[in-house]
Image (cartoon, rainbow, N blue to C red):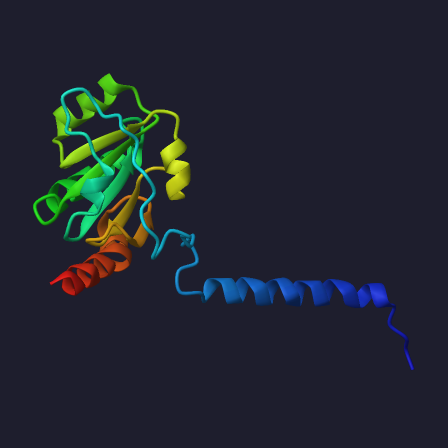
Length: 180
């Protein structure tokens, strides 16, 4: 009987293990989703700074009745510019609040002057501390909040096309239906 050295068996076993892990990863519900620890928790505090001439976003606004959105954005962020028309449309439907992340005030104001301002109120986060508290990994990120200021859903990435329709809009519709 031929004896097979143990080191010859190792590569096929490792390959089979990796193939199994990859197959499992491809079949998850949303392999790109990073779970948020904020879901179901009260929204963290908002900084008390805003852009010149804009309405200051406050913690009290986040706890007012009704569903609302909080969008972390920046003028230097290309995906934020791409999702901007969607935010403009959503602003006709419900309050959209913005947190301008690590931005120069004048650049942010120019961006809003050029493309429109969908935000009912804005806070600025020049050092990124608030983004860390909210668990933001990179702008844009949008949070759906309920009437008590609890986070219902977090969407990482721009609100555009099929991603918006498949991954964000169902959560927003569910929150709006529960609010009525």
